[in-house]
Image (cartoon, rainbow, N blue to C red):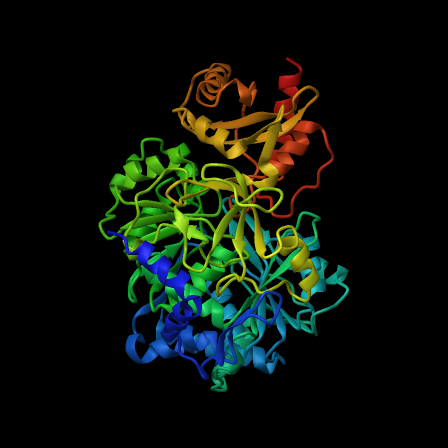
Length: 632
């Protein structure tokens, strides 16, 4: 029996008492004067008056009891390298690097941009900033220079930390030219940069601005330097993480120290069922919120062992890459995006490669980052023979809005649903006038204020932008920007972004619902549905489909079957008449499908190549496929 309903009710009855109890898991320099001050900040602030240090809670406090336990396992098939850091070793490396930053003038409240690949030094840099009370802003390694410039201008960093290159399958991405260009165009300039030289590519350094990372570390090591943890307020910022806005102007999501620690520590056992000492793997990147929360901070707060993987789900070297990592390091659970499993499924449809590895320690697969279609979940369940748990959250929240709390006892899985709201989230489905809609009816998914600990209190230096983006449309609520419904059991179904609800001749349809039907076709590896303009119906859905490896039937035959499948499952109301087979779908580096850009291409509108795109050439492929169809 799950304890979820009792725990959720406990939070509802006494929200402050609930989080006060959770806060007992954190080592505080000074306890909070108020658990929640509703009059502070935009909508209230958590743990007001408390003092703490996030790095201390992640590392130092564990050393006396688990100093020799692995804290971080680095595994890079791309670099052909592995390294394991114990809690003591990681604490010492972070304290040493924090001394380097301190010697370069970094103090509490200063901003430091981290523009790094998936190497241990990226996590060390994040934790070193937290140790000093500096505010880090991680920018995904290899991001376009213009996007890096906008982030430099917004947060005005004292220092930028980077590496000479990142590694992608079949190519080396040189970071330093991108960094140089970004700084050249920035309105504000960092005082210095610190560059980690990787053997795959050497970066030229230009005095006096650029400094060699390893030389600076070795000087500090020889001098016996280390930096102690700096006490900060629980409400002080830990980091800024930029998320792209609809206007193209990045929004600096702010994360505080105290509430962030309390919420993330609570999730590791209660949501993910991870105990201290367990091996936990999040296959993501530190450039995204998932990497912040569940590669670096949450597992270390909890005393677990975290895996940092520099590789892909396929091609490093094959579609068994994930099974190798799980087996080799004894991972108890994996958290990744559904797109990773769709890629594995496409290359190994029968899942036979998993049978070559010992997965006996593996207990749970968690999926998030985009909607997990039921077909992918069923495939993963069959291949792995473990629970496959979808959950839903956002860059803004830092942890799950809705999920299936394995640590409290699993609830029954409903395919297509990330299950139920987590304690802290009063989830409502509202119509355009702001009224609750009945169970089963689509609407805008909103969260009644205040947001729980860990969620953004505001945007960096932009309270008005925060209100405009998230709070003004539904006064008293945070607008997630997602659309969906709650069923009669309280399960939430996140069907699409609100701008992915299409209006077909007056009927509001979810593109996610149509994708769910298409994904059931046995030859389909993954798909995306977008609404395109129609002179009669206003909008009609168009489906783009990627086929499984080994399928040798005529694409036109499969496309006809897909159209009929949608007609049978959803009905003629969907007006679904366009299914196009493509080699691949355009995605961000974190695996989200760029549906909005695809819609603009289909409608012949001008579009901007998104900065987060994995491979811009895919957009030309989509355009050519649409043109070929129109010419038929």
